[in-house]
Image (cartoon, rainbow, N blue to C red; front, side):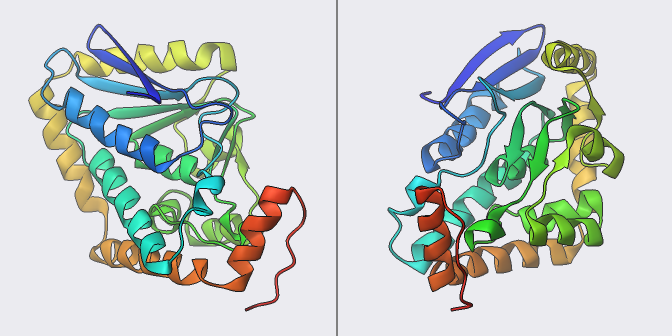
Length: 257
């Protein structure tokens, strides 16, 4: 794999996102997440997966430069649907997947982390969905997963203001499990993963399957609506202005068109 590094020890697959400079989620990286699941699916030496980022970030968001290559709302909706399907597979995967988050998990990076079964963070990590700053909306089921963790009012605040939570705040709101100093984050996460790896794979698979029933039936309708809206919003002048402003490193001027 080009963007994911994999090592296995004591039943734990440690997967490193390595796509400098910010581990942005390109279409290729998302497809590699799916390939990773294919690889560890039937590998009996892997019982738990730990996902973390190389460098300064877990993942600072989607690859905005790649958005410029998309020419239609339909293609943008299909891009969202593809990511949603991979992240849904991740969330329902029969082996536990744990995210170790340092630096930032923003936009698509947070959507990836929210699809994991657990999240451990550094106290000063930034977790947020700032898509509206670009005239866009979340596209990988973030609008549906975030309220499940932090509640509707806080999710609305985070998305509408584009302000992230710190790692400590994320723990307080239930978005993350625990915060550790950066030098201890990955070792502690792996320690927890190894503890889980000693459990019965049959019992773990059944537990993860049962946890999926916590999603209301409306969740999947919301995910489908999100992908459609993702494409519709992309066609707006505001979205094009937001993307262009991001590329030019300036404040966007939205006109509601």
